[in-house]
Amino acid sequence: MDKKVTLKLDHVSKSFAKVESDEVTHALDDVSVTMESGEFISLVGPSGCGKSTILRLVAGLITPTLGAVTVDGKEVDGPSPDRGVVFQKPTLFPWLTVEKNIGFSLEMQGKLKGNEDKVQRMIDVIGLQKFKDDYPGQLSGGMAQRVALVRTLINEPEILLLDEPLGALDAFTRMRMQDEILSIWREKKQLALMVTHDVDEAIYMGTRVLVMDANPGRIVADIKIDEPFPRDRSSDEFIKYRVDILNRLHFGGKHH
Ligand code: ADP
Ligand code: MG
Image 1 (cartoon, rainbow, N blue to C red):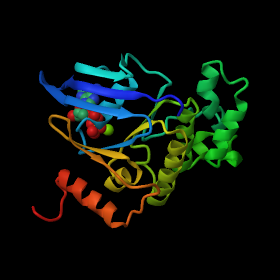
Image 2 (image 1 turned 45 degrees about the horizontal axis):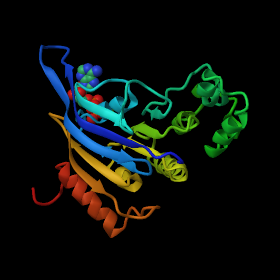
Image 3 (image 1 turned 120 degrees about the vertical axis):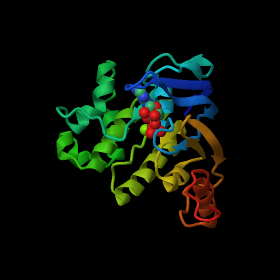
Image 4 (image 1 turned 120 degrees about the horizontal axis):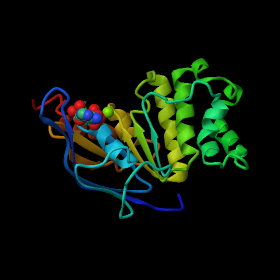
């Protein structure tokens, strides 16, 4: 990435009114954290601790109740192609082919003409040349997620937001996709922020793991994963990180 960016959550709180009563849910309580281009940040924590809320705030889909989300000091005030989001369920247009789905946002921005080769390169990256005229309904879950991923990457977002992007895939496809995402990120070195339920995935992919807790949602640990890529899932260091993070999530085996 030529341009380096700094993303900051500065004393961010987010509350939601509960549907069934007058009470509020403190989805996030006074969260402060700084992230930069070149980092791959994994976000782990129990269900409901505010992981998706953080991503939606950074994406500009919602605004904080208190505090500020800034990119290079400028407050986020809405969605932008500079902050690309990939969700767990690939949100493809069922009436468009693979090729048209991938080119869609360029076309919307009037930039498709002259960038057709870029679309083809993206199709190559995910190995779907043979499927480019197929519709989403004809693809496997893994293929559809690859399309969703490059459809976001084609905008070359400075910040890549991934909300459990591999959660719906089988274990083997998932491991292959982890490597694909990593190779794309290592080439561009944008800032990636990924939510995952899987502690091993968080360590395998992350340069940092943020561990969260719920009620109220907050960050309880910020752990730098000081290992070169590709990571070895069975190394002593890897296992030490796993034990440490599981303990912080209260899933430790010993001492309880
Ligand atoms: P996670 O992604 O970590 O599972 P979320 O960020 O989705 O958690 O949600 C955090 C908390 O905020 C949960 O208690 C959830 O029910 C609540 N919440 C999230 N979005 C809304 C919303 N739009 N309206 C009401 N409550 C919400
Ligand atoms: Mg979520």
